[in-house]
Image (cartoon, rainbow, N blue to C red; front, side, top):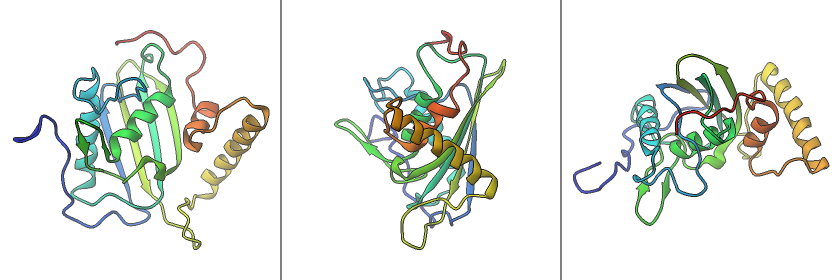
Length: 206
């Protein structure tokens, strides 16, 4: 909340954006924000709005005043918790994280971008669930270079490229079989390869 607004829109940058190859990391206690299709977590009246703001503040600190990146983004997410909230998956949490790091606006709010301009820049990522008695999460953002054709695409290490090739085969197989709906490559990969094991999505705190 600011002196003139009922919410915190973020800060204007005071330094150039990160360079290709740079990374930032954020670790926060508690659960991450999740994507809610029915009522935006950006709205201050949402019950987990505080999580949305906590992640934005953590990312603002990690960016150290730098402008949002305008190229391709790699986003890794590790969630430590004994169990998920009821009816929530890694995909939901990844969606909430992606929404918190970019810019957005609605009828009652406008948020400045923090790490990148729009979540469509996220073209590579891994989601992991690690059972733990404590609740906290970690995200690592890699600022990726562009290809010579100008398309935003990651230049991955051989190990990571091999993993992505396997995931791409799974994605293609799912599309061909009609077993998945392509809404976002990173999120589809998380559904196919990184979801919580069966039985772990139990009722947690609401």
